[in-house]
View (cartoon, rainbow, N blue to C red):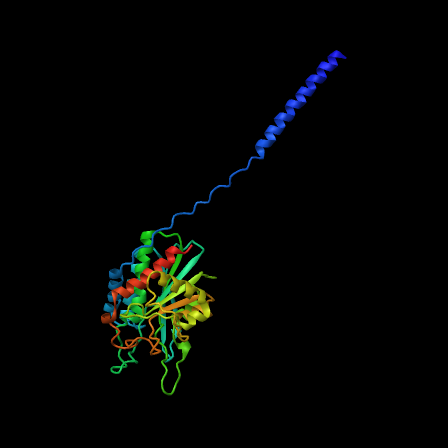
Length: 335
């Protein structure tokens, strides 16, 4: 009995100690564990758009002569643009396709496609057209002769080429595609006897929208530049852009206002126009907007549109700077 009693007392002691140890250990496991802090990568500073570089690119295009499909100037300019974009480390390809114009002529178009970080999934599409209209048919003289196309074609291309250079320097982690569309400006203009035939324009973008450079290609949004280098510009909210991609319009115009560009990027809305973004929206099902110089009061494009006065004299470095800086700000500030 006595020995059993001693064993019993030891057993009680063991049980008590075990319970204390268990409770102690159990209390330790119940201590709250702090969740790891999520540290966002620091945002890269927005680069400084170089207007001198963009201006030089406009001049280089103009120096080739009018970039009319089927001409030597057109072929030489294509070589220049491909080489320029490749020099910045982008993956560049040329999409060739056979198209027929409204006057029953057949051309091989050259859509120039430059991909920045092609392996990334979330992408942004930036576009412009690089060809020039074969005739200054809206001028009062020499209507059948070609013109330089410094602003109408040259300026948008130059802004995107300089932007490509900035991307290569900054190393931003974002997928960006630059497409320079061909044969945008070879369409049938309206006349007293005939209305404008919409689908005769923008043949390069129509071809790409039906035959994207990558099967199932998708971009979160697109921005088209058309006539973005002229003096005293006005960039209202273009009607087709508002119809298909109003959210993108509001975002870009909102950034412009924050940057102090509200005087130029106005809240007035134009009628719907036919430009490359129409077919990107309709055929490729991608939300794309158009930044284009348009005179709201006259309900028309600037005076030099499809005229011989569309030369280097109308190009303003300040306008190139504003548009280029805006695009960089949009790309570098969004998450």
